[in-house]
Image 1 (tube, rainbow, N blue to C red):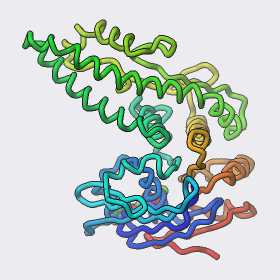
Image 2 (image 1 turned 135 degrees about the horizontal axis):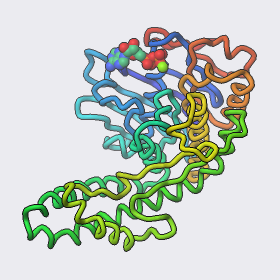
Image 3 (image 1 turned 90 degrees about the vertical axis):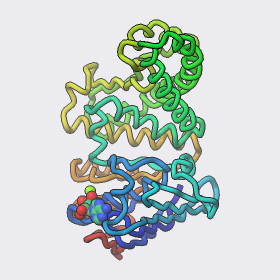
Image 4 (image 1 turned 90 degrees about the horizontal axis):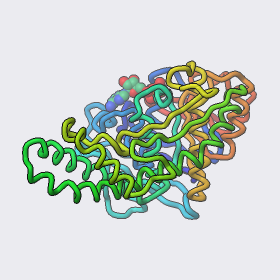
Length: 364
Ligand SMILES: Nc1ncnc2c1ncn2[C@@H]1O[C@H](COP(=O)(O)OP(=O)(O)O)[C@@H](O)[C@H]1O
Ligand SMILES: [Mg+2]
């Protein structure tokens, strides 16, 4: 992946900006609240995912404007391509290579990127949903079938939950549960299997990256925890069995208590639960390691190096670790932000942009 040109109109505090990125490390610097993260976010949206800041689409459009447009010229999968993404009251819509407009989620897999921002620190200590979103965002980018399964799963889950509520009072509802369970189990199995595979494939790289970014000999590890079945027993049949075993409870609660919508990643440091024991610095190292691992995994699966977007990471690292990170970044095209460009003196950064009050200027 390589972005040549990134054009932004009426996006958050940015009226209009055009950035021509170099193919290595690009730095956006400026004081707080100037629009640096907004620019990274506008690049990330081209992956088809929702904003990593959990904002509503409406919040992305510049105040008092109706529509926000992001245009990008990039190279991927051996050819030059274009994306035009429009955000208005109907949501995010996009066209790839001047094709017909469709929902932005259709972009998944065409434009690959991995983002790290302070918001991601909650990956370690936050709710399980945040770790599930991490897996989902990654898998949507590398496996076309994953998003489709996720959409079907969500729809079938709503249907099953409604049926479970009906089963409290309508006897005939019991006749339908097998059909509902079957369709839910098939998608639930696929999602769980892909998440298990993902976690087992990346965990070794993650622990190596952790040592490298934290300069420590702490052992970190994680595993996928499924509410349906252990990885060696997972099949559509075992999922159906779990549903059967849980049925009584599920009817009482009125919702399905097991499935990928309830799963989590269990992360440890020196064998202990990271949610309880990780310090601020350890969380930061863990998330950064996870993001670098994510980028390499995307490359392994697709043959394309994703764009790396790193928000405000450098200031927290000492100079040795900054160097080590910048060295790693050089293998990718990256866009990184910082407040103080002085910390980058004597580092070999190829392009710098100053961001001030939503305006971007390239430093020569
Ligand atoms: N929809 C919007 N319209 C106009 N300004 C916005 C909108 N959303 C956010 N902003 C402004 O963007 C600025 C924050 O930009 P941000 O990229 O987070 O700054 P930083 O340079 O610190 O990363 C704030 O001044 C905020 O008021
Ligand atoms: Mg910021």
